Image 1 (cartoon, rainbow, N blue to C red):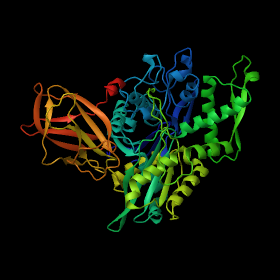
Image 2 (image 1 turned 30 degrees about the horizontal axis):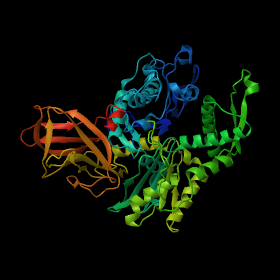
Image 3 (image 1 turned 60 degrees about the vertical axis):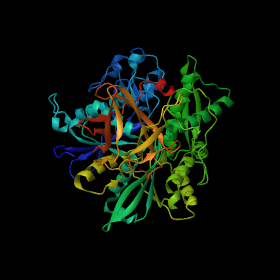
Image 4 (image 1 turned 30 degrees about the vertical axis):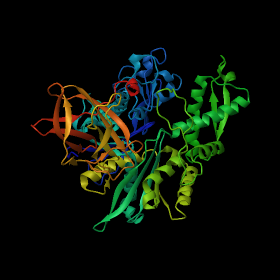
Length: 602
């Protein structure tokens, strides 16, 4: 952290919403939320402390030029925020959303202009990395206009967002490559003083911040905190253990769940199908455009009815297909009872702690899109997560912290609390209060930055998985049979930022002078493996992360004996170095993604 930075910034770059928090760069400064200027309609600019993570790139016939005028710079005809989300529901082939979910999609080139997915206008597409960068650029440009502008048309360099210390959050389940791409997006936006922080940890930091020193009165040594973060697009689980060191309580993240593509978006769709069924009973059929509008209307209704609004229902009005819009409009309602019933039964069903995630029968040939979960039951995913990480220790969580917009509903929170209690045979379980389910991650990010700078309470975490590199076995060539690939552990679970781990007493042959592939793999269940350990039978326990394709400098097809060294950078990314054992040469293996989805079929 830089002492010259006047502000400490926390950014929650969310799947559906992005939030920026800030405070003066001193330990006693209050944390505030930045009201982001954005278009909310044609030519209408408002400030909102939530920036919807939606990007619209319309042509002039869809949104006229005069509707796009803003005081800040934009890229071409790009619209970001509320207006993009609302108008984009009507022209979805122009709308980019869930860019963050594409950052961890292993079957596409995340640096290629592929979004909006399946849209035909190549010139109006962005890569997942570029889309993420566009959201961050919007924050930088509007912040600079509001905070760094001097009044004479210039900017105060010290106050520019690009010159601040920034803590940028990522899902706990993001692997090394997705984190690297997030950093790349930030750098494309001009933000280079970045530290990465896992979102569930940020939520817990926010709770500590709002509790002050009293947080130590709510937990004790040996407690196990479950952070349950259910947002618009994803569900994230983490376990944090409370320990003690020289009489002081400590916090350590000990487990991270899979990247689960189930959240508020799935729920909006489920509600829309339920309402569509009611309309069909009235012999009303919706076309695709009306269905998209219905999903948006159900999202608004869900948010209103889960937010504590005393209303029993939310009115929905859709434009009809005829010319007389008033006469042809379609009206219905979404009730609070329907919302609670559909979400409880479909996404939070009662289940046993031994429940398994259901895998429905799938069609052999599928579209390559966001890899949504086939089982939407979050409770079954939670049961599997706890069983995988706590069964051997015969423990259950003693506290739970909820985060994410879905968790605003006391009915949904109570369902999870009662279920967790039933799994723990009646042991006590406390809910740690969340002050703001939408903004806690951003607030916690800024707080963690200040804690890092001032020496305050920090959560020990490190790598969220154990990482491996594929090593071809040394054996005689056999016709029709490639050499088996073993998994060499290169980085242990929990390896902390700034750590360096050489693999001692081992040599490997490195091929240089031509393009070669290196398979990076990971496991979030094998937590005992240490660097240098070779795993021969790894299918099922260890999953591929990425294939690194690179040409290392050297003589053509030269084989060099090397040692390996893994480095976890201060910002939380991973570097793998090959160190020659015959001279001073060394090579850094770049985590490059595959070029096309077809590569995965070879």
